[in-house]
Length: 340
Ligand code: 5AD
Image (cartoon, rainbow, N blue to C red; front, side, top):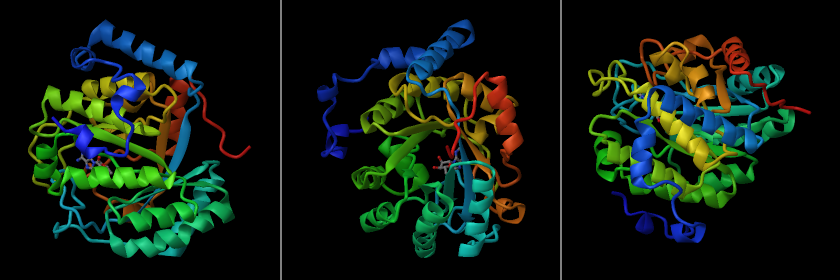
């Protein structure tokens, strides 16, 4: 198990907040729920979301601006060294044009996502203030591990928030699959928090070698980090990666994790991710019913999108505005209005 005390010097110790909400045994039971008991968990998650005034669904528009990546995560096809993938990096004009389409669609958050690619850093610095000032949108970044000074620069330029998933709380498993130290990632999360940006994190369910105990640790780590957004996604065996023959993650276990995240952080933003829909038709609607309140709509043009091979090289589920609005309606929820 991860030594959280060592990893989180500057974070308030657990005892100050009264300790973890659920015991390991309770978490084990919650994660394994199926059938009517699982539905009851989801009802409680929805009730917690409602009581926190967090029922309105926030829309984000994502621009996948580069598929160059320094990292070699075993689950991801944009990993460095994958010679079968042709690489792209958008221009400032590409990005601003797409950001404008997001604004025109009435979406208030421009979500810039890409591989961990230092050459893209100046581009990010150029577009953050423009998206803030010219379009009056929030800027959410998911660009990987960066030096502390770069996080500070992006926050100072007006970036609103940053997502950096811890993926798994097991340092050994993380090292084997992500091939860099978990401690580095946790340092980055601490630096991000220091900048004052809102911070999102989360885990992947179903990585090979992951156990029930690891998943319990994931939730305890998430609780410890006190993020503003929390996500869980099922593992997808991605063509052309070292893990392509491993079986996919369990959708129900992912939904249960999301519901527990909601119970732990009633007012947080919890996305219902496209990977849920890829593995199970209706999976994203199920995510909303399990307590999620965020959907990311894809604005990456097809030519680029096809090369952005995270999750699946052969075909991700691409979330359209229509799909998002339909499932929000089916869940009996409404969209959070972006601009007044
Ligand atoms: N299965 C599940 N999640 C994945 N990610 C990337 N590839 C996969 C996969 N094959 C997730 C990681 C990463 C985010 C951008 O996408 O959690 O942080």
